Length: 278
Image (cartoon, rainbow, N blue to C red):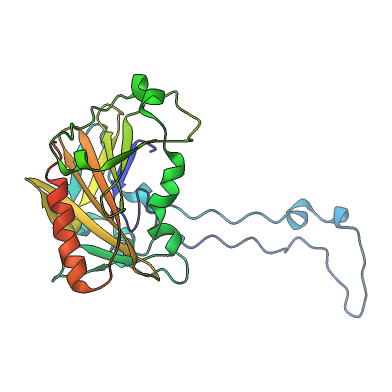
């Protein structure tokens, strides 16, 4: 499944979302020797039967991804949440990210606002700052790049500072081949942007997305715009869409909080994405 891109809420939930069933409880120690009332019994642990000596570990929860329909490699699949099995429907609608911390809320989809919104922590909102540490130079990876990167000449990206490239896997693994490559930029206001392009067909991967979350269009292509907020004014936007054999994701860091600022930024991000040839 590592080649399957699950686009649920691209920023809020990430690329792998799981809903777990309740774990099976460990078996009771009914193999212990009988204890006579009124007695104090002391024995070495080694004299216990093996089931009592080492309790069985609980059965790990089953990921809800196992209940999703099979995804044929090289295909882009769009389905309704209503087509999912009921437990998976409940999970996706709740928008609660697996492993979310106590201060991290569910995704809120507003009919009046053309984006999905979730509350994260400062570490997740500041993800692009962390990704700067993963940057490599083009010369290190150019021979192994297998995705045809969009020509950004003539787009606003040409005026931004190109900081470098981010590839899948460990920063020390530059052997490739690389079907997913990101370019990181800094704009004139000092904000970080990262454009990721994935040749999912070349990689033998597939995409599954939900039409209820396709709230934007990048030119003629359906897209999902999501916003993550933290405890400060810092925010992180993510806009993803599919065109031909490529999946695109544009992430933009910012410092906004008011509804008017959010609406203005949302329009600007979609307009910027529309300048990317795809």
